[in-house]
Image 1 (cartoon, rainbow, N blue to C red):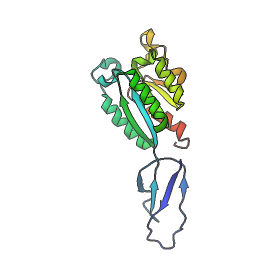
Image 2: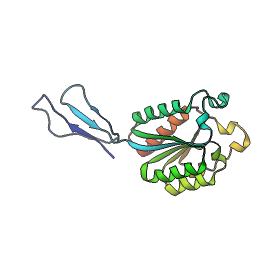
Image 3: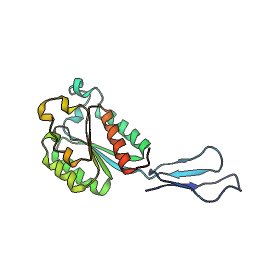
Amino acid sequence: MARRIVRGASTDKHAAASPGTVSRPSSTLWPAAQTGPAFLVIRLMVPILVLNGPNLNRLGKREPGIYGATTLAEIEERCKAAGTRLGLSVDFRQSNHEGVLVDWIHEAADSAKGIALNAGAYTHTSVALHDAIRAVGLPTVELHLSNVHARESFRHHSYIAPAATGVIAGFGPNSYILALEALAAILIPDAA
């Protein structure tokens, strides 16, 4: 996917007539320069699915000493803002039901280019999520708000990690932004 710079109306009749191109996807329109000939940038956003598992709908109220005071709605706002900055279109979802998460991962095969997944407790129990990630073959980043390796021993094993492209844990709500940045680096190599 390439960003196209489309020549717009110019007040300078001697300006060069050929449009330029650069390579970075996105989907919004805005002026590309404040001076000289007018250009319009068309950005093709890369679709990303951000999935959240059980109990994450209780963020901000559930064990704030571990998970912080930030709500899932606030994390969603931050992800969408970061996505826009990174050239990603973020579809953000949460379910307490394993089968729904599996269905959404399958759906992503046709609607997304990558997945950021905070599977919550299903990280440590779900072979079904592992198999779904392998089945769709999309770049997937497993993420956690807390450092699962500094917690109870049953949280040290992940069924998701062997199927994921990478794992981010322990950075609170910033774990989501780091996961989006990792996906952007994979899917839009020149996004830096």
